[in-house]
Length: 326
Ligand SMILES: [Zn+2]
Picture 1 (cartoon, protein in one colour):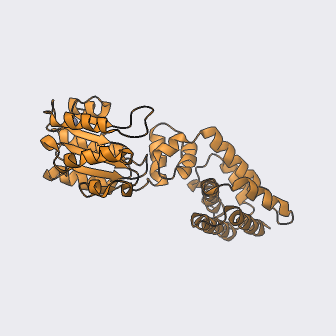
Picture 2 (spheres, rainbow, N blue to C red; picture 1 turned 30 degrees about the vertical axis):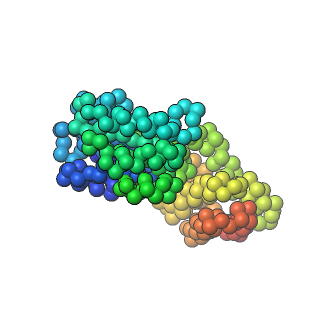
Picture 3 (cartoon, rainbow, N blue to C red; picture 1 turned 180 degrees about the horizontal axis):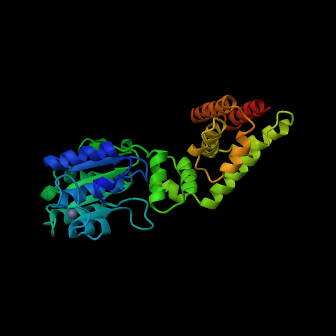
């Protein structure tokens, strides 16, 4: 995948385009970021761009070299990861890759190696890599992918250029999901819960998500200050550990954003598959009330993020929502 097709990491891609154009890439990098934010794609794009002779600062994506890198069968690109059933990348694997890198490239101008996840190198393996990182044989390029560069040995970090990848925005996750053929409303829901990771987005299952959203709506619609039990039922059902609570709050945020639009008369801005449900609900409130509820949800989300007691925070939120609905 050429740089031009990478979504959501524009700044990083721009820096790489410049360094490819000027011939000033480093030989060792650490790409730090959560899984599923585009680190591996960017690493492959960089290697493609360095190998491809068609475009000055990117890969063409279609020449034999580009296709081999994308297909994972380029003889000069090596991927090192823990062997099946093994937790760590072993010293033997590192020795093998060092031997490979010391050979002449088969067809590319240089060899390339992606090592993932770099924090799973045993200490011995990491130590054996130090010399290679300092002076890669034959101008090879080595890219370490890591969730947290602080978990790598300082001696490894100091020999590599650190590139920090941000999580993808929900908007970009939605875009990528839709590109892969997923329905708009499902993509929207997944993107809300994906925490910026395409990997997480892929792990979420649609049925579970839809059922969860429907349950959430049922409980919130039923909130009634005159029936305090409805408040505690909702918070019992929709709070959990921190991540579960945040997921519920994200879903609520997504629904109430739409409700604010609907109550203000901007129905066209709402693409949700449950729009009729939301419209029905929105009709009960003024735009000000809807906005107040949205604000309450956002505040609760911030509190939970700052480690507030999940259940208490949700009790309090549903009390406020019920008060606003009265
Ligand atoms: Zn090419």
